[in-house]
Image (tube, rainbow, N blue to C red; front, top):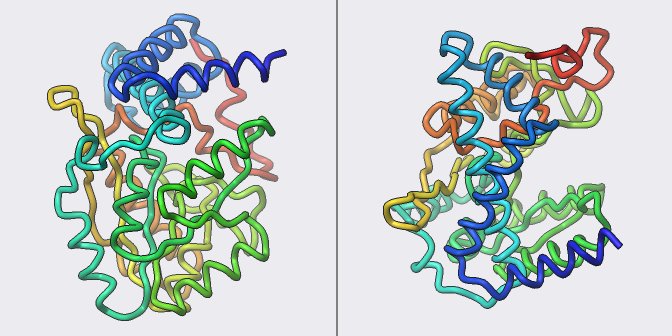
Length: 299
């Protein structure tokens, strides 16, 4: 029953305009903030850890703004997957992103696009595909019925989705060997430490951090291009903000590489703190003997 209701809502979002869907998502974000559930609690904990010098009223305003922007982004991502195709120029200010990508690609080692959980990362897909054939890691959603929707939505942007398994990893290596592009969300928390993840500082706190981007950058000598699409209320469009990643991401030491990667993610977050996915348990360290910060009681 629940899945049928959600599927009906998704079909409805596909019929609405992109801006109207954004308003609806922002309204849902306001409602989630008022309900003060798990998402709000996670955001409060994360922001207290990352911005300890910010006074509590200011942090609470940031929590509210963040839930609104998260709701807007999630709803508009669904609209991109299931609605009519829209002209990218109507939605996005490229801000020199495509030229920056082509310049890095010209070095001849492929290109790694790093898209943090900030803003609407799905909006960047067509711009990446316009630069170079691009392969993206794809993690199936928890709700099985969403799998086909997400897979089809991402594929029609021109990006080739591959699963997070051995086959998918081989596809990433092959794409870079061909001088193509790959996409990875750099702040995804690995399930275990070891080959897939190490603990590295993020906003001065230990965080399980993926090693995949570092391994790929080191093996293929591929540059990393960070990008996020941030909504501008005044224009009703998203603007792409981008920069070349720290060369340290390709360091031999996994810890040094992960530290450089987190430093670049943090650079994005500090510039647009209300647009980051603070509801995500970024400081959850699988297998750690240290109590999770999300298990603490908060006021």
